[in-house]
Image (tube, rainbow over all chains, first blue to last red; front, side, top):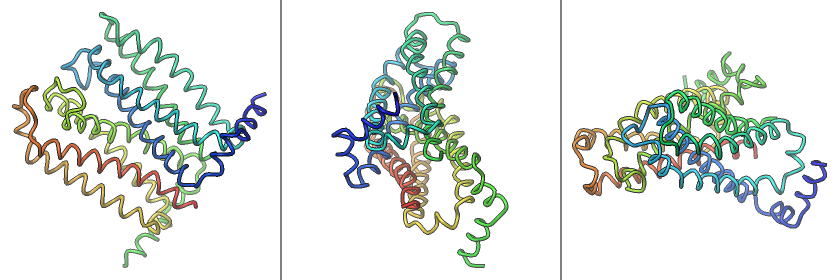
Length: 156
Length: 165
């Protein structure tokens, strides 16, 4: 089923349009992808360190999470847009790539953790330090794994 | 011994050859180099944004820079060491790309900018109050750091692009 969907994506109007563009578009998408990645990971890192009781401790977790939120969303938006520009015209290349599938399974987990665990520990008034620490480790572990797997995709 | 000979020696060393030919080690080092960036360039980005006045204006600069410093220095150590391994593995190929020396020069400039900032403003910013507007030179140093590190990352990402084309 997925093989069919991936093939349709690549051969869609937008897929063939993107496929015909200059290589420069791909290079620009790669640059936006890494810019988005650094913004996202660093924002989560600043908040994650704070959850663990390190880093910017002169602010409350809630206030810091509020300040990093826009950078998280900006980073995610850059990642999604540039990721689609890279993926759509080459969907068939990614289909058999095991690391590609692994990356998106972990990404799904990271998003679930972000909308549940992350929201809980950054918004609750009273969270036990060790709960916050374990939550931060899970959240950072998942997102950094997505990035790590992403770097691996191109090698296999 | 000429520079070209040194590069060949590094490239053909046991470590260089082993890294280049391994299936997993090379991508793992690439992965570490990337993740290290989130700590190094990523955290310095937030310091720069504070200096420019875009992030956490309610905190004095020192309360952003000081607690993040050990983390971002650790990040730079990881990024530098993994980068060194990547260089050893691909010394001959990477030195043929014009962008590589440009990237190194930009790293030196970014480092000089940071050293100048610490020397000139490090002590003074310890007494700065949150609400006071930062001197233009401080904001400029933040902007320079932001632009230089962004260009370093962009150049780094383009290096394999130029190598395999």
